[in-house]
Length: 379
Picture 1 (tube, helix red, strand yellow):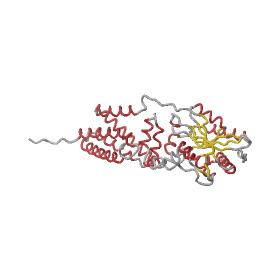
Picture 2: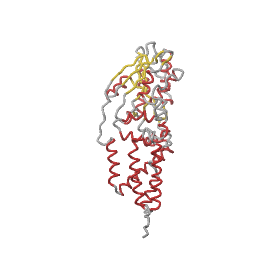
Picture 3: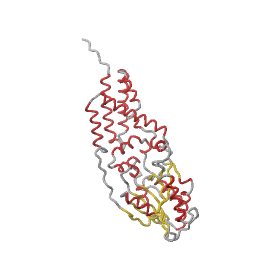
Picture 4: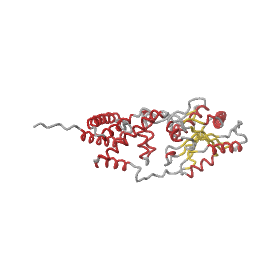
């Protein structure tokens, strides 16, 4: 997915309309026209971790070679971060000359794969018309949803619409959860993986029955039939690059474990308090986005048992030297940790959050012991 200013989008549309002699009018594709799905390789930037999907329409008779892309957004949108967090950020469709599209991915050293669709001329025309209608109407805007509505799902929807039925469905990995499907894409990006592990809630633990990632669509297309023949007529690699391995001295499992081990072994009250503050503030943030955001992936976040906002109350009571209630809240949170640990046993994110469970347990036990009322010894 790429960022585009509205001015740039307007200029691209006007240029495209000019080249094609009034783009808003219906252009009849020739019998030699081709439509294909482009799958772009993953990159190492946050926006490119999952790859990208687009549609190519090529017709040499009409001098057309266009790529339709549903993954554009305007970074200059007012309150961009707030809108993205809330889940009402508008993405939009845009068209590129094919050569420009491929050059961009070539410059980024990301592979591009093409799957030509074997569909009749009238359905190629219908798909082309639907794409153009969308591009030049308000329908080009859509509200981005991580699983339900993105650059890949929008491509699936418009192709199915043009083929007059639900032709493209997910093939394979339907017995895996969305969370499990996502994890391999974070190789070399440990803290991003940790982030989605703790901020995503119950929805991503459902079985991944929907196509929402580019390579899921690519694999599903290869197994899809249409009118008693394979939907994909021909597959080829446009450009290919080996993905460059990511190495970072800090973004890895080792620094994560070292930091948490330091908190456990150093056994300093000030460090324990900072740890509780961070965990509590994260919990408060999770509660806020759970109610504020329209992203269904952020709802019902059971990680609140680990990142509890009530830890902030415990911290305040501890600073006030209220030993009685500090001790009681510590025991309550230890119990919540036990419940959380049992609940996580069959979850894909168990091992990535286990060091946090252990660290929180040790810190809470220390606080409970330090604030437990001593038992008087009678001689």
